[in-house]
Length: 132
Ligand SMILES: [Zn+2]
Image (tube, rainbow, N blue to C red):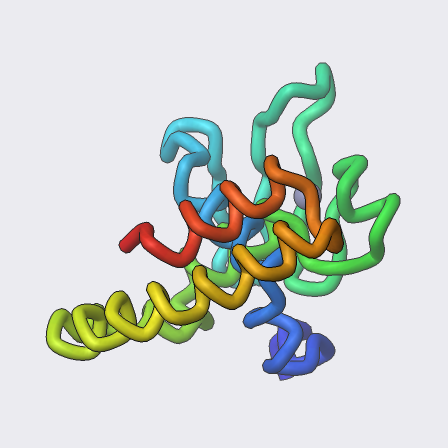
């Protein structure tokens, strides 16, 4: 047991959690001090006090507010080799998906024209579906 198992694996694939993991990769190495023996870290962030991080909790606002892994916990887990690597990009599959996305965009255009989503949301969905 390392503490990270307390989180359901499916939680890490929630878009809000993926965003945190991506943000964890932006933390500069010099801000992170890992204590591998104790499975913990001290991470300097935007607060005056550095964050005390374990695989189960963190002293940052995000963790205190949500009680779910924050970017600091993901960074620690990554440094300790506990995260699955990101899925490998499948270029062929990506092309087929883009073709399917255009049909999906047509469907969302109908939602927009029917007044069920705003023009801004329609554009966001369209941009998201066409991005790589
Ligand atoms: Zn944190």
